[in-house]
Structure formats: C-alpha cells, structure tokens
Length: 182
Image 1 (cartoon, one colour):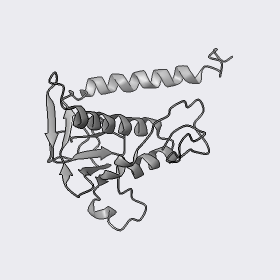
Image 2: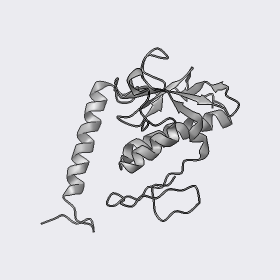
Image 3: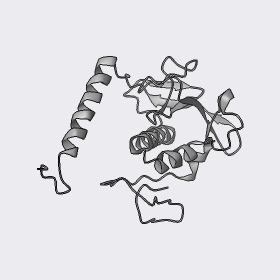
Image 4: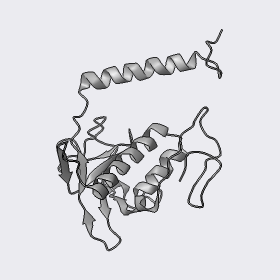
C-alpha cells in the first residue's frame, strides 16, 4: 500500500487523513504477507491481531505511525535485497531462524542477543515484540539475514531522542512556509 494519495496502482491503499506535511510514499508488495507474525499466548484468538507484516504495515499506516512503517519497510527491503543479491562481503552478516517485529519502533530484525531473545535491537523494547518467520509459498522457511550493524548504546539512544525532540520543537515554531511564528 502507499502512504500517499491519490492511489497510483490497484494494490495501493490511501488514507483519508494524512498527517500534515506528509510526503512519504512506500509500496508494500504482496511478499510482505509471507512474513508471518507469531502470536504470544495472550494474543491467540485476537481477531484484530496482524498475522503478517503486510497487516502490521497497514496498522502502522492507519494509526499514522510514519516512523514505524518507514522502519518496517526499510528493514524488510534490506532483507529482500540481501536475499536477491547475496551478502556484499564488506560487512559482517548475522543470521537467525527468525526476526522480531517491534511494535514500539517498527524495526524488523534479529533480536538483541540472538535467536533466544525478544528484545528489539533498535530501541530495546521487550514486551511489544513478536517473532516473525519468512515462509515461501511452498511453506518452507527462509532464515533471516541482515548486515551486522552495531546497535545504539544507551548514550547514543539518549542523544538521538534529544535531537528528535529539539527538531520537533523547531518544526513547531515554524509556519507552513518555513518562517518563524510570531
């Protein structure tokens, strides 16, 4: 689906109310439905729980969680590129049986600490994460592979949050033409 309107293709979903100033367009092809989200025990039977990453992307889009849907798209597209082109040989690659999707930040990656954990390697969230397995149409599973990127330290994460808050304050002080208010 797309995060912009009007729709440009039959497989594109547009949202009635886009956030002010949104100029993001992401396309999610049908392969996102092959990334199955495994439910935790307390989520079994919940008819509204997203069953695959395409559903998760739709949820993030409907809730205007642009950072999350952008992170999800970036992570999955990077995975798909590695599968298509093979590892570049310049980076250390990591591989595991499954990734996790973080509902807090939208990151889809191997969990911090490897296959045994459920902690998001990007933001550190432990509760709002679910295992994701990639299944081919024949039902066989594809291991998750990603470039070995060093996760942010607590200090780096704190500085990033401070920078994001400062940018948000700056943007709030500008009118639609980019001039300072009042």
